[in-house]
Length: 359
Image 1 (cartoon, rainbow, N blue to C red):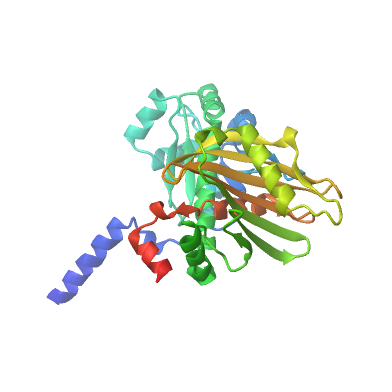
Image 2 (image 1 turned 135 degrees about the vertical axis):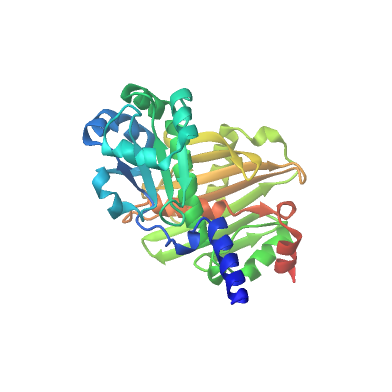
C-alpha cells in the first residue's frame, strides 16, 4: 500500500509539472486559419486592424493570404478548442461574454498590464491542445484595443508564423524521413548540414562549384527546389539586397536555365523584398518574392536566406523555390522555408550530433 501511495504521489508531481500536457491531443486544423473569438459588434470595429495584422497577402504569383480569419462567437468556443491558432479579443470595459472568457484566463497581474502597457499581448501555448497558440488581446477601451492591434501587427504576425513553423518542423524533421547518409556527406565534405528529407533528391553536390541542389517532384506540376551556395574568403559587404539579387540571378542562370531552349530564370525585381532577420542567432538577410522563366513566362515564389560565417569567412546563400502552377502555394513555400531553417554549420552542432552523423 505504501509503495502504491509513493508511485501515485510521483505520478501526481509529473502531472503537475508537465502542465497536464499528457492529457492533451495535438491541435488540429489548417495552418493558415486563425479563429477569432469576439463579440460581433466589437469585431466589426476591430476587423480592419485584425485583417491588416494577419491577412497579409503574398504573391505566389496570385495573391494569397498568410492567414485567414474566422470569427466565432464566445458560445461556440468548445467547437474550436482543439484548433491551432486562436485569438480572443475584447476591451476591459466590455460586458460581453468574450471578456468573461478573457477574465477567466488571465490573473490580476495580466489585467494591470493590459491597463498600463499599450503593447502587452498575452500569449498562451498549449492551452487546450498541444502545439496550440492562443493570443489574448485586450486594452482599456475599444479604441485603445484597435490602436494596440494596429501598432503591434508585425509582432502578432511573426509570433503566429513562428508557431506555425515550429509545428511544421515537428512533422517534417521526422527521423523516419531523414536521410542521415546524405547529411553525413554534407557535413564531412562541406562543414554544414541541412535536413535531408527522403522526398528531396540530392540533384547536385559540387565542392569546386560550392553548390548543392535538392529537388522534390510530387508530380510534373509540383516541383520544389532547395540550394545552398557559398563564397569563400568573403566579407560582410555581400550582405546587401543588391548583392543577394545579383548572386541569385547568376546561380539560376548557371544551374536552372537552359541554352537548348533559351530559357532563363530571373527575379522579378519589383516583387522582391529583403528584410534583416535573426537566423539561429546569426544576422542574415531574408529575401522573398517571385522568379520568372523568360521563355514560357512561368512564375513562382522563392525564399532566400543570406548570411555570413565569421569563422570560415564565408557567405552562405540558402534558397528555396516552388514551381506548382496548379497548386495553392502558400503552404508549399512555407515547407521549403522550414527546410532551409534546418541549416547549421559544424560549429553550431553538438558533439553528440556530429558523432551521430560521422560514425
